[in-house]
Structure formats: structure tokens, C-alpha cells
Length: 148
Image 1 (cartoon, rainbow, N blue to C red):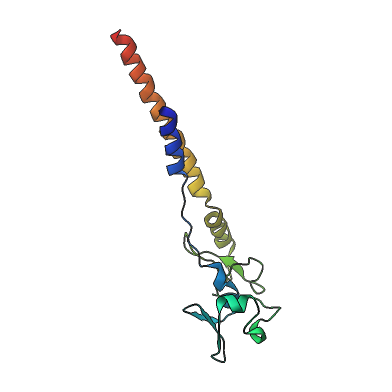
Image 2 (cartoon, one colour; image 1 turned 30 degrees about the vertical axis):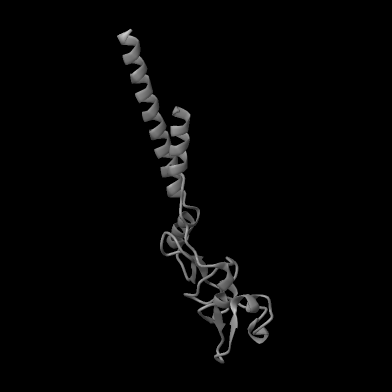
């Protein structure tokens, strides 16, 4: 029974939720086009379903081979930001944008991306929780042994 409690604590303490935008809109957004209700909207106001655009079945003239992502645009592919820009996640969860960032922002982005703080806190919480369970178990054994 004690093992079940420990495993349950490990699962609860190590669960994270990461929110990002769907991969299917990636090509449309990274290339700078608008999106609306499942469609990629191009500068000439023509539109394609995301899936058809991604497969090259529609909007081929807008599927530029060589492109870079400008400042403030959402990014999925880390190497697609234009020169001088880097992917930056300004909030804890979500989708990064290409931005001109300082070294401190680079470090902040790395921490957020890999959730180092959450991992460290989870390990510490798991250790504390296991230690508390073991201490309570030890106290209960001592009380039982003293009563015999």
C-alpha cells in the first residue's frame, strides 16, 4: 500500500501541462499568412484549408521555399527566425515568437523551454513527500512496538 502512495505522489508531482498551437497551422503562420476557421488566408485574399496548403495541393504560389520568420511571428522551427532574431517564449507556456533578445532573455527562454525549475521543484517535492511518508511509517511502527 505504501508503494502505491509513493508512486501516486511521483505521478502527481511530475505532471506538467504545456500548451502550444496546433502543428497544422505552422506552415501558414510561419510564412506570415493569416488564419481563420481552418483556412490559411493569403495576401490576395485567396484561401486554402490548412491540410491542403501543407500538402501543396492549394496555394503553391504562396509556398515559398526559402523564408525566414520576422519579429513577433510565432515559430515552431527553431532555425527559421530571420537573422538577429531568436525564438523566445515570453510566458511560461505557449508558442514562442521570433524576437531580438538579450542574453538574460535567452537564459529565461531556455529555463522556460526545458522547465528546469519545475523539474527541480518536482524532485524536491517528491523527496519531501517520501521522507514524510517514511517518517510517519517509522512513528507508527514505534508506537505499535511500544504498545506490545
